[in-house]
Image (cartoon, rainbow, N blue to C red; front, side, top):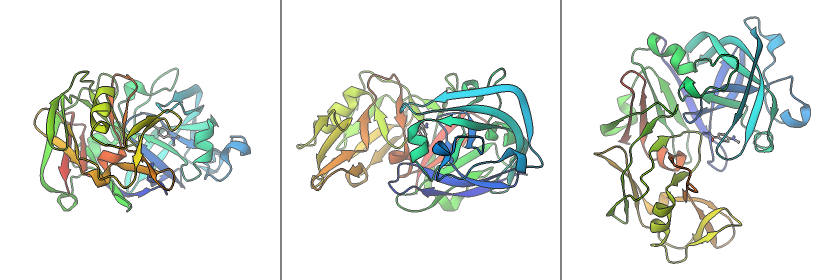
Length: 327
Ligand SMILES: CN(C)c1ccc(C(=O)NN)cc1
């Protein structure tokens, strides 16, 4: 089999997790992203003004690279960032799991937030290839390419709070979790690991959702973005909380003890966050920015790293389910 395991190292402000990937013999630190399906890297054919500080992939130095003539890609993410460029095929090794002809996208241009995020050399899309942006023909993700060669058609994410975790391809390591894994069916029709989430809890009190947007498990998003009525209900229980449009979200006094927040993962499990695990950042001597925020009516609820790092997550491409376990 082709199993593989790599570290997932949190970036300084825990806004993302980076993992070492070898492409055509060159190693870069990439952001594994279950919320998108493009595998792209900073490349030597970018303006230096944009790649300054990043590791870049140099196709001319790879003996196994082949160009996908006439192909291109262009992607934009939920936070407004974007990237675009050219396409080829190369050998990709992630902790021993190897795909010999992975479609690899080379950036010729990226937006400012990618340039300034100097530890991030690109993304490994682990969503479904129906949202891959390569033209004229969409290409499969690393996981789709390797899935049938794995011991089990799964990958797992053990993201940690202020510590290095791991991504595992092909096995569910029992040492990485406790108790049961609570699975729910995934609807992949929008290209995401998407599932229903119809209830939530604040301070242990359960509420039925109003908007009830489906949720996605997104390792590439830092925060938990819930329907706006859910965010309002949560921060309504935090006495100093205000919606600060200059910060782009709810802030509160860092001295507050926050209530727990629970979100349904399918119909029979609620993933509960402790109040102490909900703050995302301290923005000044007294003010904190919440890790739970509204989705601005976006129509999907995004379960990002603030939640995922408190659990062991299983992405099962065989029976198309998503599961979480405590750890
Ligand atoms: C600017 N960077 C590093 C980003 C990385 C990932 C994403 C994202 O929405 N992933 N689902 C956005 C931006």
